Image 1 (tube, rainbow over the protein chains, first blue to last red):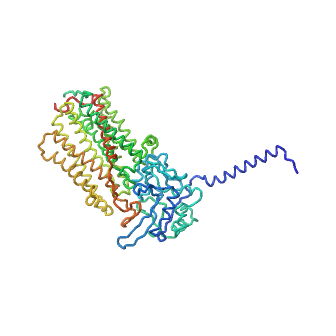
Image 2 (cartoon, rainbow over the protein chains, first blue to last red):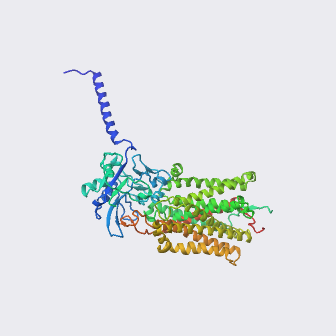
Image 3 (cartoon, rainbow over the protein chains, first blue to last red):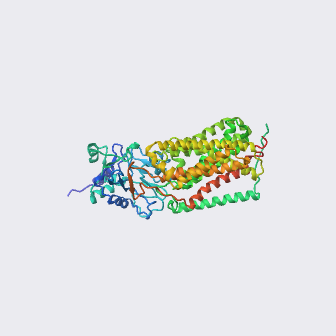
Length: 237
Length: 395
């Protein structure tokens, strides 16, 4: 058996340290990558697959985000809700989930006095709860009624979504999951427990399912007339 | 020309103590209301995720808008050279900054996180009209402060005219900014109109002058300083003009709204079927706060000027509060239209009229703002020479 000199042991242990550090850095480079404008995360929702009485996406959102609520519907937060739409002329009714539409030109970001409402490079619109002063001007400006105000102290919070009384909050597109390479909770739940009406992906990646379907099929956006360029597209509305 | 003499109000008289004590009590009650609302969170108020701005905003906007209008008397004397108004310039500047301070106090104390005021003063998103208003409001104190200095210190007299012009322009921009808070909201059908800026300027002219006249008459009566009938008659006519301008922009706004087919719903709500909002609009805003002051000003009302001034001013204040209430609360009560032409409903109150009932705490906070403005005026007229000994009775 070859005897290892003290010098060789030191070198070998150094190499182990360097390699393990490099491996750690490599996994960090996926997880901790900064948001890039080369991506634009979005959703495509097929309302034909969305049953009126199904609230699986809403329930999944509540569980993921720790939205326990206080049984006060007018003041409890709702990041995603099912909106029922009826054509008064024909009587035709359909149902669809509505959440923050992660606009390319978000009015909430425009009006926010402190810059707490912000858009990441990859298009996800968020609220920086550290500098939100709770003025609620973003709620006045949002055409989608997508934001909620934390009207009281919150319990059952999730580590990835600290919530503070007196600040404004809304759908984050599950940014904590997206940054780990996972889809938003609503999308995952809809695929697993319902009819898979929601498709998540990078609208700028022409090889992604969502980009290919948006290029191939007719899709529409809620209040497209406002020119906000939402990242959430719908079929069947 | 008679040289104007100014003097302080005598402190610690029974009347002074009663007034200061009363205002102090209102402020303490308002602070109690703030503690209650902030400690529990906004769910204890009438505000919800649907009606996000409530009665505190009505008071705040009313006071802020009135603040810029209260400066008009000073501007009339300095910028437009109307001599009868010149002795009242100091008082006009003081009432203006006091009203602004009261309004801002209400606005800040209704924030979800009033403790983060320093964040609002250090983080600016320059695309936000709100952020610009933070600068415009802070600047108003400085600009009017300098203006008052040039009025009260003879060594600064040479800066009087430029300071007056600067303050006048600043106040116009400030009210444009306040109106644009609503004017820039594209998705809310009740707002989203450029006319909001001039409408708010007209509102400010009327509210500010009305409050100033009430302060003047009250100060004249309680400190035994004669207020001239000619001056009051002149101010009533001016108030009539401002009320007419306000009504004009209200008509233009609603005519434009009615012309757009997509906004017929919100117009029908405010003007015809909106319950309390419709009543407040027609009876209080237009009737009591618009038509009646015009009658008092121009239709040969035979009461003495002081009584006419008080009646017209009180009506304009009450009508103004109703106007801001209908604008802010009524505008939010009408739901956002995510799917134009469709009927909608959801667990988040989509597609239905949103209810709002103000709570006592909210009203108390609003009244606290009024009391803060009043106590600022009282303190300053006590320690500095703001009030002329003779308020126009010699002319």
